[in-house]
Length: 539
Image (cartoon, rainbow, N blue to C red):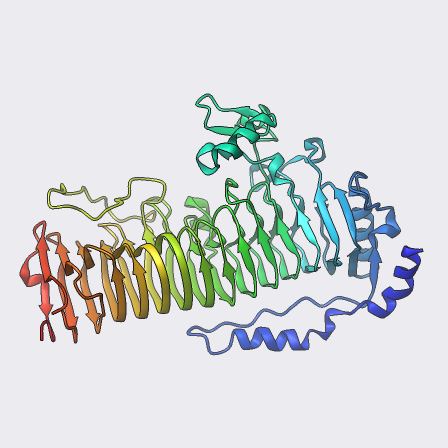
């Protein structure tokens, strides 16, 4: 009787996304008046017809495998010219689902799509010369596709993921080990099975949960995406992507449990999304190494607005795979609560690529365990955790080549953080300093203040930096730095510490340093001549 009612009601309730005029206006508003030119992505439009998966044999009892029913419903809808494939309330166990062009996979309230834990239902395939496991949800070379509604998509990632002992409490670890699986020889990493410990095995090659490759006009609107084997949502080489109103969840200890990874994508708008994940929440990438540089496909024309991130390694992250470049990014009105690092930028020698024309406005943070804003060009390698001391040896500077990453023309305005370990950490490379970074109207409270190593062309205007100890600003081997109208807590030990023989052309403008124990300290070969000018140094 229930399905009869669905059959009667669907013609009345089914709504074509052709009504997307308001959505077009909304996306248009979110992409208007940007500091770079961007053509707003258009949402997909579908015919006004719907197909229930139950009409193709699906049973939502949580143990019947519905892989065939999903495939038949999608195929029938595609053959009819497209429309909406409807997943009604229930627990729908299934193997991998392959989308088709002109299809909206729609999850009603109460629908849980649960991907099987049986590894035999996942096959290994070739993708660009690499062996990969097919993803639970996949689309390759499609146009006009969507995943919408208010249901939940669960990737059964706990059947795939290793877990590090250091990421769990003693009780959690004890219970996990008692549940079965296998431990590595050191006994500090748990695997779901011995097979999962073997490189190259199917169990070891964890898939991304939602893999969208070379697709155009993509909409993700409404569902919860959770418990992914690897990254949660991975659009790769996609164009015209709209992501809104989604929730992305992974356990905080989930290895590589990213939220949304936009990889060499163009014309993307992400808004009103919530993330609570085990790795980077919103991540911008463009591939790694020579192949990505030759492809020359940047991640570009990206707008991120009105998003909330709870746990994650980074609230918004750029890199580390950015060999194709990242440019024209605008993020506005986002909140990070307890995120490991707020705004995160990472790369390393050998990656190459140019990251430029990035704008971050109105970002609000609280309880950040590391850096509110952090740059490192030594990701995965040797990066100084603290600034160089007076006895720091000279470093050997390698030549600049195509593998040298470049970060430049990046702007931060109205950034507020209540509590972090460090306010700002800019660490470039001696052969390629971070260049052209602007901070305006920022207020950051932290244990440690603003640190800068291997940077040039940094301008800091109307910044309130509130460290609990040490110096407000610590600048090493950097040049062409302007600090204007900065505020700091009374009684701070040092306002500005300069170090390194390559530090020079530092300007202080309209700053009262009389409330600091010392105004400027020179260390590790820094010359007093490095200070180009002072204005209102002491009352």
